[in-house]
Length: 88
Image (cartoon, rainbow, N blue to C red; front, side):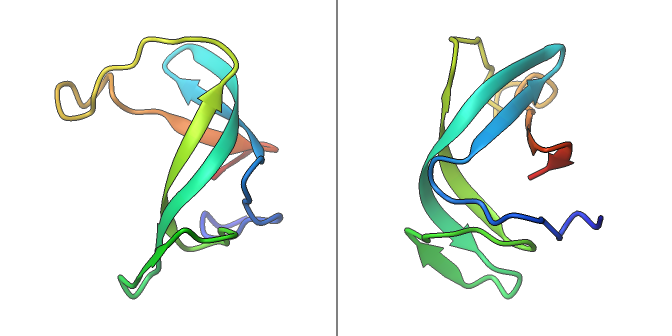
């Protein structure tokens, strides 16, 4: 599976797993704010996210966690969202 290929499109309400350092926290994508395509075109308020795009989303976590801003500490400000074993 290539990184740009996802089997199921991402919509509002999709359940993901947030990986940050040694934490694995269940999360839900609560809002799709914007989408940037490969040709740098911006789509505000998309309904669905497919493979090969970058997006700004809002997520809701099942528990509170401490997260550093990426602008203050790059190593502590990184996280990944995964679903079904694939990074989304």
